Length: 150
Image (cartoon, rainbow, N blue to C red; front, top):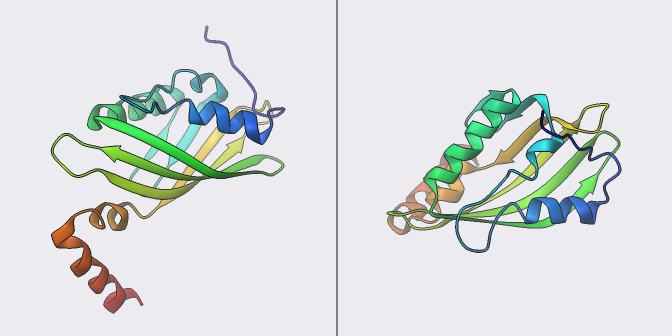
């Protein structure tokens, strides 16, 4: 049985350290040290997918690792509320054949009564942030978005 840990008594600085060490400055990320902070019934959701259960969440993390040559994360701010934690982040993904892309987002971690993460919701503009890094596509995409959405 895997040990479990609680975020309930961790400071914002300790949470920043935990999540910052997830992403190496060089090479592939390693999430293994934060998995014990997740509840076995965790629900993860972002603009692309919804994943239920810790084993499925781990598999999703491994798929992301496999897609990227390198992955870096910067956490400009973390805010803690009663039963949730908000993290602002900038994730830079380097791919083998494509230009690197930085995605800007926010994560909301919902805590179970035992202090483990029972829900994670990531908010980001996936296509806009990726298309901004494709030189011939960035301007037409942003022009389209302004015309259609404001």
